Each structure stands twice: as C-alpha cells, then as structure tokens.
Amino acid sequence: MKAALADEDGVLLDNFMRESVEPAVSGSTVAVCLINLTAGELVVSNLGDSHVILAERDPKTEYPYHIV
Ligand SMILES: *[C@@H]1O[C@H](CO)[C@@H](O)[C@H](O)[C@H]1NC(C)=O
Image (cartoon, rainbow, N blue to C red; front, side):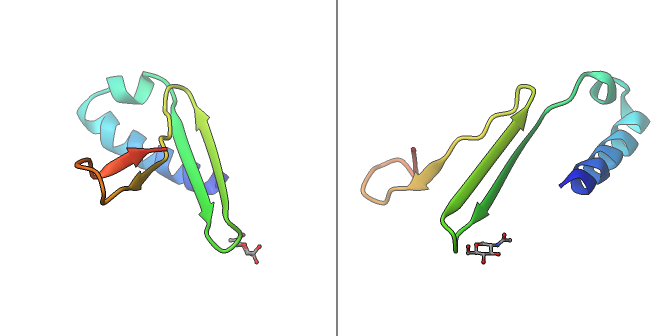
C-alpha cells in the first residue's frame, strides 16, 4: 500500500508540475477501500478530505444505487 501511494504521488507530481503548480502543492488527501469478498471484510481508510461512501445497486427503486 505504501509503495502504491508513493507511485501514485509520483505520477501526480509529474503530470501536474508540468501544467500547473497548484495541484501539486495544495495538500494531501486519499481514500482507500480494500475488500476481501471471501472473508466478508471491508477496510476503509481516509486521509484529509477524501471520503468513501458504501452503496449498493437496488433494482427495485428508480435510483441506480442505494447509499448504505
Ligand atoms: C481473504 O480472506 C481469505 C479467507 O479468510 C483469506 O484466505 C485470504 O488470504 C484473504 N485475501 C487476502 C488478499 O488477504
């Protein structure tokens, strides 16, 4: 997880530093969701102002997703 976040940070810095400095210096935020369907486990982590919302498809309503 640490390596994946470091890789993503490098990609963001590379891309944004060429076009605009603002996104690269405006702070840090991340939301991570790990799901193990075999074990029935859901682990959510967030840093900064990122959030995770759990939703499920509900074919009985007019809305495509139902926020759980
Ligand atoms: C998911 O859960 C199963 C059952 O507990 C476990 O055997 C497996 O190693 C888990 N997968 C991961 C990626 O942790």
